[in-house]
Length: 123
Image (cartoon, rainbow, N blue to C red; front, side):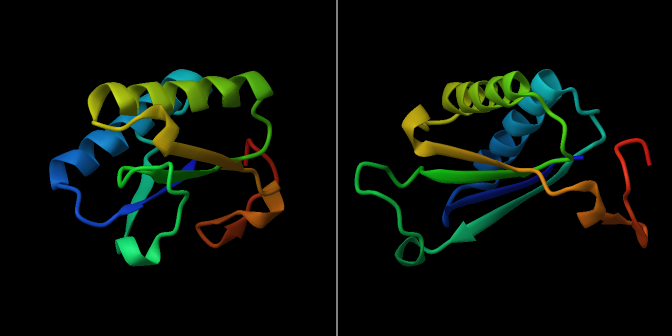
């Protein structure tokens, strides 16, 4: 159950955002094996003056935060990063250098679903 948050500069079209989210979801299915229904994604649009990033980046710069259950291998994360970046840059006018990805892996006891604390991957 990855929680996906994408921070982008405000002003992209509805179609752009759909392609962006689809690209990320498809890459996560292929790289870390999530199910098709497992889609918890959000885009946060930020006014350009409120989004600071290095001058070497363009207005297509994005930060993708993936909050996932613990236990994915280093190789799975590497594959996810590469697949997400490749699919975005193939489908949208985004240079790979403008894609910044970070994985967050809070322990199971820090997850709550349906009013219950999660204790392990199977629960």
